[in-house]
Image 1: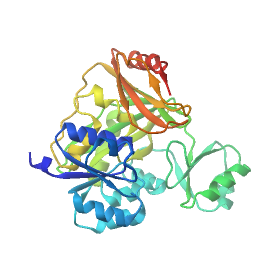
Image 2: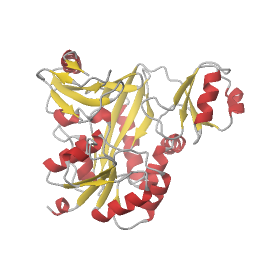
Image 3: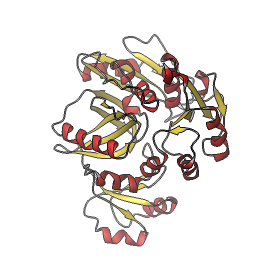
Image 4: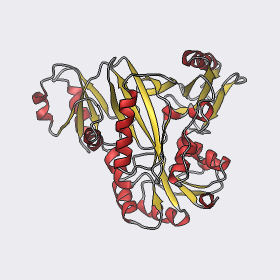
Length: 369
């Protein structure tokens, strides 16, 4: 197949790049990784690894000379690198660097959602700490760093105006801060869609996710919501209008009536890991085929229900476990374990989402990490 002769380059060497590279090997695709260490999770699973810093422009310039299509593990590429990638003509880049710039900034990300009339929490920019009084804090407000926030980092829930710790938080956010209304949600949901250059668009199932200390702990599905079809139509207009290529994930709040988009991730995503074992087409194969502009096939469920459970470190001891029963282990190959670090995940299927999740909770007890 002609597309298989192209080489996909991935900026980044973490677990997302690792799982993309493993899937590329299965599909007979050529895949290269650029990261800082040969011990990085993705570097361990490819013979085509290039040492380089994903934040250093000179390293990126050198890397793209060896590939045909470039994609990202993370949305947090630096502005100078994204600007260069947008202007150069050597390789295709997906998602587009301009759109990556928009989505990595929480303010312009929110404005993009507004442009396509996608429901989200009311928001605004806090330019000066003195403007805090103007917000008339009647309910809790959530403040987020405009850039580089993830897993709760760069997020602050303000409950009273004269909170001295908030002043410290504000001063640290060099790229600025946005505010959002606090949403008393009933549950957190997520949905992933994929688009190629031809305009093929496919959706993965709607799932429920659960966060512990701002990190995704588990996902289960499929779930239903009466507003899902309306939201999907709007998300489809967004990716068509912006000519998005690749996997894109939308984290959602269900407030009991509406579905509100909380955040957008222009990449393969933790809430889509279940797809490796629950669907005919997983998010990693879909992303690779999308960036190569291959035909996209709508994923079909292999089972009635599924779940995913993240394996998050709680100490520095070497991880250990007995036999993994009735589920699938995906280990990331990270050399060091420490509290809060994602070391792997478990996938399972079942007759209901809760049954699949209970399998994983039981299995998790036998894993020391």
